Length: 323
Image 1: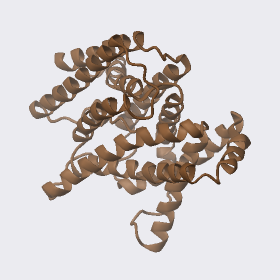
Image 2 (image 1 turned 180 degrees about the vertical axis):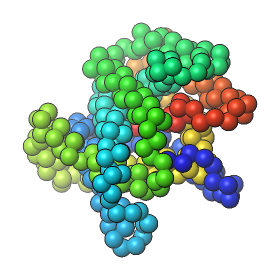
Image 3 (image 1 turned 90 degrees about the vertical axis):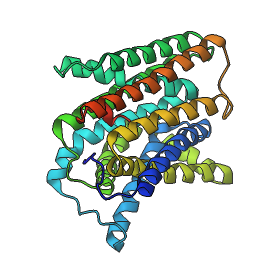
């Protein structure tokens, strides 16, 4: 995927792309949390989201509304590992939202830069700047402090969120090393990602026993307008989030997408204390979240400074917190 800025993109388009991604990303966390409070089958929910994305793009291509190319077997083989890691990240992220509150979820997801730095060290990448190292350490310290003060501590939820961080890191490493997404438009990446994930997701919902229980629960709740509204909204916003994320990266840069992701995280953390419940306020927990957020903002500033001094496409610049 080309992460460079579009030379002739207007300031309005750049701002709109960044703003759209920020709004979609923030909204998606709360929408997913809301739907999972009523429908706990997160793997089935992800399958619906990916199926809706694939069908929409397919019909859009057939009717001429999108310019996505037809499926190419060589491209599909190249993108298969990337798609599996990407969807594993999203699947575990959704599962974690069933057990942990939104502020802690966002705090844990901010550990991705630390995981990326460790992966880079293991693979022999160059040493990052001192500010980058200190900022990710501060972020990690914030998570530990916040977890100690989390009265609603849920071990399975924390485990799922940390596993999501691992798979997001593997996805970023694979994308950088393979260049698998280069030469593809945002629509094409979305389609391949959704299309390739479906067999894997269908196998999982059967193997884990979600199906047919998830279908039975869906039918039982089909007479609830509020549930159907949130379900449809989650499908629509899932598509919108993926599209705006790729659009922001292409129109602006991967670094811009990262910074927008951190800034929306600040807003989501604040709103998470008052929306959808599940947060037992404790001084230590709040202090940890403040430290974690400060580390995230510092990390964005450090990466911005690094980009100005040496404009190199760095792996951790690709990071964005999606769900």
